[in-house]
Length: 160
Image 1 (cartoon, one colour):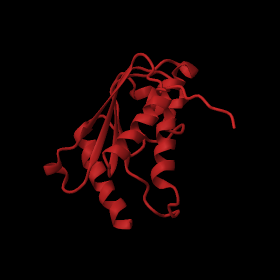
Image 2 (cartoon, one colour):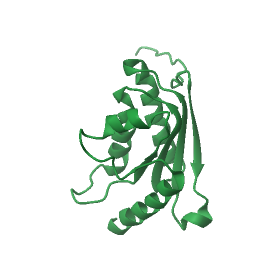
Image 3 (cartoon, helix red, strand yellow):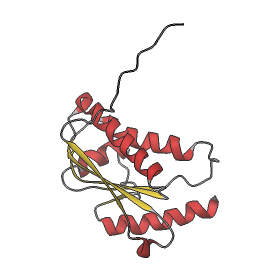
């Protein structure tokens, strides 16, 4: 039998992007744990941002799992973003992790996004079909995102 060698591996942390985790103050959120994943820095254009999108997705999943979150808010206000569709990986991965096996009419795991002028128009062009209104889960204000998330979390728990 061959003798295999193990080499230490560390997941990549792309340059120019940072992540922080926050929870909504428990006294203000009832029993619910609303996780805010705050991403800041610069997302490179196009395929140069692939590692950045993968990093965002893995950090969101890590936070949801490690902090036992009931809902997720992606805070992209500090992210300079112009284009690149790997940013969508965070939504795909969260849905695969939290919504697998869900019934067709079952509410999906609550995810909201807060943007600023640094990324708003590019982000909305990525997630909004042509001639459609911005999604109901997109916000410019953190308090509005939290309020919506708390409501969606209650709807999600009511179904489960």
